[in-house]
Image (cartoon, rainbow, N blue to C red; front, side, top):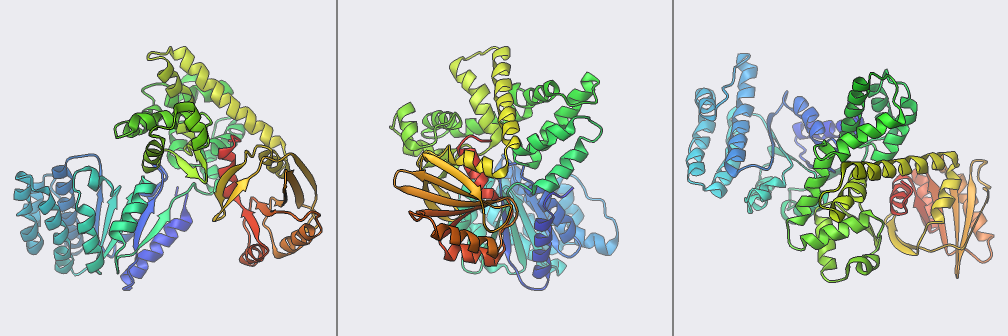
Length: 532
């Protein structure tokens, strides 16, 4: 099931435009497990009907292994075109046999590729990479079709030791109008930097597509289908979506283990104990897939300059230290800026204004329970680890249940009560969230569903309009009238909604100098202030 139909449609439109002579290169970035490879596979099946498709996922492997796979992808793309002319052609498995098989059908391409194997034998990987890239226009010309080059996890080029790879790739991006470049990466910070500084040159612009969590209703329908036949799923599904943020990979791993545990227990009902057991199996046990994933992310941070300090800072951020000042009090200021920069580069921590947070919910949970216990005791007892993980998940569950009993305006008021005078970046602007002394609510004038909030601190007065549904122009105008009637006048006006706003309402809000908080901004605040 495609959880991002809008993205799939957009990629399809870009592909169609390329076929009509309008090239716009694409870069998909997002956390691991967000569905980038799935989207590329969907695009691959569509593109193979009209274009030469060179799909080459990258791994942590040797240069020789990668380059041979890249050359094989070039040959496969040409042979796929020949397959359309000659019917089904069985393809050999070995590289040497593939070259021999392609010789009568793609003589020019084989002539360009054959000498590269000698470069690999001499470990001249840089030159071999350049020659491999230059074989692509040859197969394009020989087959008479434009090509789509897909490099999944393209940042691994640098990790392999091909330090010049992005420079060489950038030159081809500029000068090959007959090749559409589609890149993906699970390291958003580094990917943006590479794209900005080394690939986006002249006519080689990339459209950057950031994969956030899929829409809740789409993911909810998929999860409900995956848990079909299990009683109690009505309670579990909303909490899972809330906790894991709708990320497909995390959900699929937890749901798979949940079904397995239910089968082993001979149960058709998802009880609290069964759910906790499944979470422990994937995240608590050392052999659990999520536990190993979290450990590998921390290990990647540790194996670098300032790695030890970075891991220490990461652990304290996960445990509630939000600012550099607080981190300095806990672990000392020596080397702290470099350690925090390391966390940003590895995409394990994010800074919003002056606030730091571990945005990944599973990593945050693992750091606060399993990893914390391992740091305190080199060989902690399994029962101790399990108690800590159980307590963490149970606390999340209880806070979530309590929040669900509150109306949306009450949840927002509770959030306002947690502000700590922090500087944050929301709605494309920076602002300080004061520690409020008094918060009052009253019915709004724009609609029966509106609530107006007045929050006061020393020398500060905020007014907010809260609506769960979409905000329209009438609601903005009524709220502006309310703010003008306040004495003293509010120093900040905030529009808060779970749903969207039409463009006219947004323009009106911006003209009135209002701060707009929607779903993404509310998620950031909930993460910063512990209301997970």
